[in-house]
Amino acid sequence: MGKIKTALQKRFQMKDLGEAKVMLGMEIYRDKELGNLKLCQGKYATQVVEKYGMAECHRTATPMEVGLQLVKADKCDDAAPYREAVGSLKYLMVGTRPDLAFAVGKLSRFVTSHAKEHWAAVKRVLRYVKGSVDKGLVFSKSSSMTLKGYCDADWAGDHATRRSNDWRMAEGTLLLDKTLIAKMTKTRGRNVDKNGPSTDTWLTRGRIRSKALGSSQCCLFWRFQATRIFKIGCHVGV
Image 1 (tube, rainbow, N blue to C red):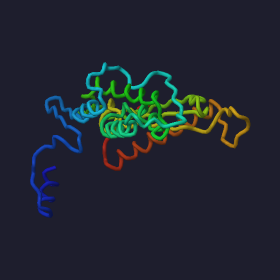
Image 2 (cartoon, rainbow, N blue to C red):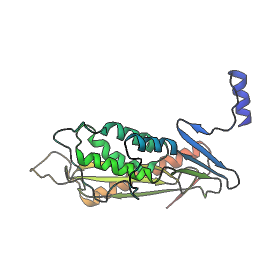
Image 3 (cartoon, helix red, strand yellow):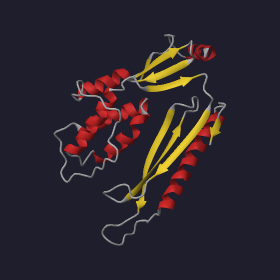
Image 4 (cartoon, rainbow, N blue to C red):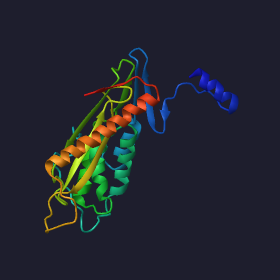
């Protein structure tokens, strides 16, 4: 790192301000005794909760109700700042909170067709954020450097379109096996047509699961290859 700083100083006018503590709203904490580095957005998370009037709300342990089904509203309710709230949560999710990915991804589908029940779901996520403002990503030098991947799939789980959803999650990071680095979800082809024949692809339960597993393997392999490119020692846990 010292050599890089010296080379940059020779070419550009710059000042060494020491170790970074805040970057793009992300707070950086170092525990040199334990060899840990933590990234979080506690200040930003608190600002988001206060901005949407949830500073005094009751906390909840999960960002979304189990089995919650939302459908597009016929008329968009613009009384609540739905788009702005989802956008704020998405910035938090992309930075240091991948645990919000599923809920925010689902709510993002209704930015142009939301109603009171959709806003209630956003408030549920805000209640979860209220109780976990200090949650973030932790990297440790004592990591076993294991890259793990998990996948799951449902069959016709979307009650509105009868489409299947699969999600793929690489758990761990290129540096720490217990830190979540990626979580993705994708809606597959229609399985059951409520209104008769359709040109959409009909997918069986077995095919949905095989597609989810194949996508997860590709995701895991890509990240493993990235560790080799950057010469980071890593192995894949099966």
